[in-house]
Length: 112
Image 1: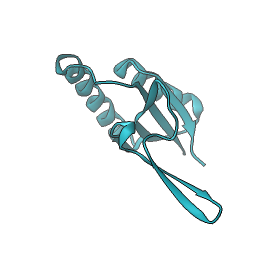
Image 2 (image 1 turned 180 degrees about the vertical axis):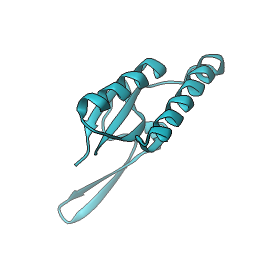
Image 3 (image 1 turned 90 degrees about the horizontal axis):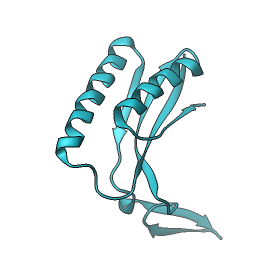
Image 4 (image 1 turned 180 degrees about the horizontal axis):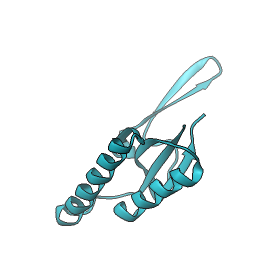
């Protein structure tokens, strides 16, 4: 089976209030448990805010370090899930369910 990355893109700014976020997280936990039970789930993680990132760039025999995200934008990678799926259609099915739960854009991409 191939592995696919389901990337969750979220808007910059504060997260939703607890009364909005808690039901989403409960549904997300249930989806992750369903993925585990079916052998689909490989790994998942949430990321800290983009401002916590450090970018390393090799240039002229040196490595330059800068604080902050690699790219400025209105959205950032907030988390991801790696899954096993027979094909892209199956991965898109899981991605669709994830998008319905979190209400955010999900990018589905095969891993090499």
